[in-house]
Length: 122
Image (cartoon, rainbow, N blue to C red; front, side, top):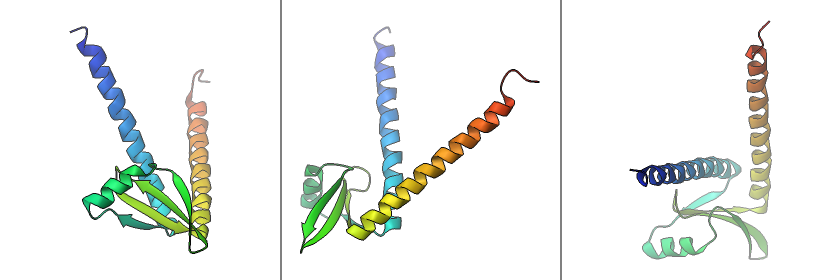
């Protein structure tokens, strides 16, 4: 029984980390789509195997026909590669900053409400 408790705690921690990563990936992929990136799903086992060789959830800049192309590999959630131009990457960056600002404002608003109702009460 004593060995079972730490094992359960470890499993719960790993599950929690996986859930957080999936949620972050979901938001990133929504922003990628909003910025105009195109999802290229791995349609075959070979394509999926190639996708798994790429660094996951990281932007990689490639040059294609003299122009920058940004790719974002997601071998786990959507099993796809997002590809976009320099302009689409810049749009993604802007959307990411706007999302972070909105999250910070929402967090500040929650703390303001909490401060009004926190101890000591008047």
